[in-house]
Amino acid sequence: MTGATQRGTRRKRAIRSLAVAALALGSVGASVALGALSQNEEQKFLPYNVFGDVTASCPHKQHIAFGGFKTDTKVGFGTPNPLLFPASMGPIGKDTNKWSTVAASPAFSGGKLSSIAYCKGGDEPKVVRATKIVLQSAANDEYRKVQVSCPKGRNVIGGGWAARASSPLYGPAGQPRIDIMGLRRTSNRTWEVSVINATTSGQVAVTAIALCGKASAPKSATATEMVPAFNGTKDATATCPKGTEVAFGGFQGDYDDLSGRNAFILSFYRSSKRAITVHGGQNYLGGTAASKLQAFAYCS
Figure 1 (cartoon, rainbow, N blue to C red):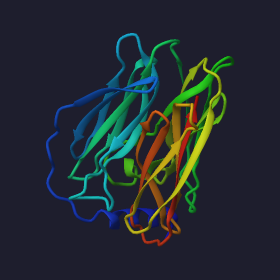
Figure 2: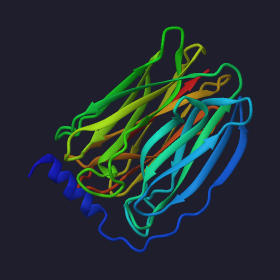
Figure 3: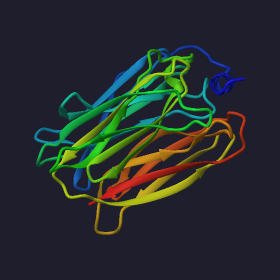
């Protein structure tokens, strides 16, 4: 049996039971101040068989500093548990006043998606994108990575990604086979996206999205946690040193289908003015190994 066939078989085994579809609810928004940044969070319920888009906007005379997202996905996947697979997160086009998150709902139970905009005044950032066609991940589930660089004179101040499949449903080319596993700053001017491409079609367009500003390069803090096997969940929270605040953040999940490790990224957000939290979950795929989950806080 090939690696791709094994992945498809295990994923099917993990989501056997599904129930009835629910109707989409309206958007729920919440705006609060959080340290030097303001925060606006918009939430919608996404029903079965859709790519749902939730957009949060910044207040007048403010712009995006960076953004995050939350889902109410629970492991094991499938009804009665809510389930969403993130497909993209970032500004809309060159607009720096809105932060959009898109997710797929492949289970009849659907799920709630929140998009979070962290906003501030001052100089407007520049949005830079780089798209690369990536091949199917190898049998050991190697990450496929895409980088984007800010122009000279500007540093990375935040970022997102886009890796959207042709279908929101389970299947050989569905969104559940394209897993966002990492977002991180790899140099002052470079933003890197890591995905697992388990589609059988092989080729997927992945976009790295950087917000580029004139702020000085931040210091970084990292937190590492282990997500328990057998439908375990865990939060990793990276905290900035005293006297500094979070400027933006990133994450890295662990994935190795051969051993069953799969720290899926379920939520990513600023949990306090000094902390970035990543919520990860491990869906049982036949292995017994715990999965590593990391949060990165970039501090200024």
